[in-house]
Length: 182
Image 1: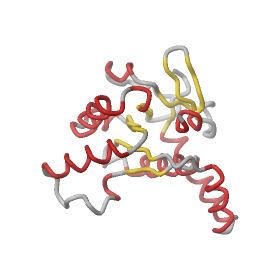
Image 2: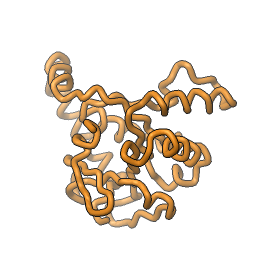
Image 3: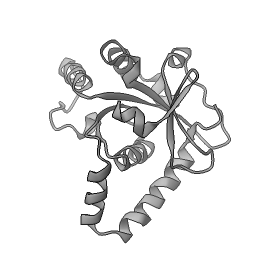
Image 4: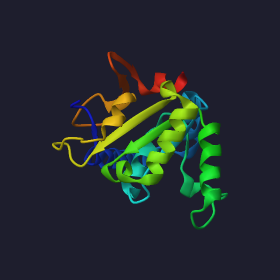
């Protein structure tokens, strides 16, 4: 797939979003968000070291009007990982309508991300799971594990800028906004 999202695109989108947000007042932004809100919750599986990329993806998902769950934002999470951490994550995966794996190289290597994906697969089933592969640069190639091929992936309409996202699987392609509504 040539329209895999790159870290560069996410950084550019975040800069554009900051500029746009600074030009609008809070009430207008809140009104627009409510108009596009599908009241969908997304469990975003990620590698904690991917901070900047993660923040940019969260911004893009929130722009679509969804509520994004990330564990480091959860006040109910313990300070250090334990069995309770795993139980809490399972509870959150079950309570969220959709599951997205932010598939950076580090996330694919993470034991926690793989465990979350496995649990999400068992509980959410593939129609509610998508992989968002992130390549290092626009010109690089995304190399993921073979098991990721069984899930729909989130792509971008254009390889040079962000804007319209799609969920692609086998021969089907729908907008991310429509996938979130399902």
